[in-house]
Image (cartoon, rainbow, N blue to C red; front, side, top):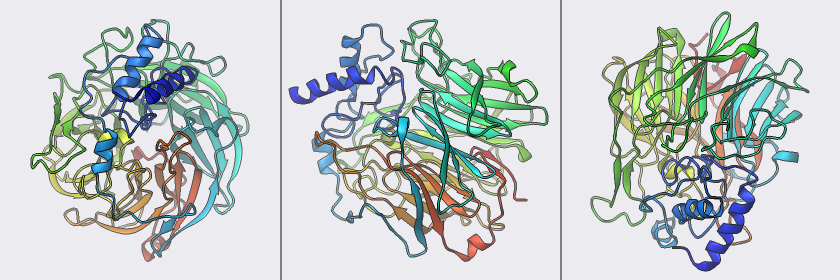
Length: 535
């Protein structure tokens, strides 16, 4: 239990959080996959230590708002107390100035701070997509369109206020698609407030915007999907766009999110009539129920004081990356990583599945250029814990690289984790990244929350190595003395630069100087979860 001071502060924070979200998997909870359940609030990191009171947060919320979407949790073992955080060895963490530190071949070119309706600490920046001269930035409060034709001086074009975590974004031609994974009273943007997921009239799913005029995007379609949409993946076709909707967190008391939830939703958006978008399939990927999960257990050698070993149970997928030219998809599905045949895209079929006792939560996937390798990421502690240190080690909260030359039999090759120790004030774990399109090499830029940005070469899958890095430094503590959640959520290569959506600091534009980048191919657009062959 937290001290009375913390419990009181949490109660006040949660009252305020009701105005923000009821059922939000949020960072730290950005993705509270490890320590909270569907229904965590955007204030779950408040209190002593990272996730120290995640269970208490949900229980307080339930007592304050009976019948809310926040369900009490049963087990605190996955969460970190002050003492557990203090036991993590961060003695090698370097002091980094606000302006950042980096390898000699990487430097910050520009920053566009959060502003207006997206300025607050609880308005988290999330994913990014790109089309032509524009970056489309997701934020828990809506979408921002930024003109990036001059990467040294990006300009905000418009901000669309449309609350609903995570507001992960994708773009195709004149359409922007966003994910809503919090129960709302309406699908519309105006008048959109949280509403209990126990109400059958509540809504969560995907929204579709027409941004033919980048200065004035307009909502043209909404599609409700079971358990909402935590993330989504576009599969563009000649006359339509299919959307794989990933969601999880079923509960018997949620009429629109019933267990078992071993499926994804497939939405069709006709390009000539996007308003008629609708669910066209709900393929069950795990008819046997998927990986059952491993409850938290102490370190086998008894030497790891603060971070238990555990693996989430599979109840849907967190993220799916498609490689349509190869009819393949890689799914990071909570308790396991899967390779799928998508030759019939409305009915994907799982070809193989892998598990790993060092992986807590299979979060995302990236193919190599030729599709013979895949990098899976583990979001240990849901993105809210300090896991980049010697205590946690190099194999947890890391990437795992697999050879999938035979998609029916993936073979593990190695782990990769950033080699720098981060302070115990900094949430740090593997997160979203993309390939740098260099012929003959497999190079990936990746976000690590407050671990910053890392550029990894995994051409030799058994021996990945870091080519460069950029670290913004710790956001420090808030006025109450608690860690501020932040860092790079998504870091992607686009048109010769790295664009990083920093949760608190805004859009960073970073230059990576290398002979490799001189060979990188141009990109007319980018949705990181929709991979394409080199041109």
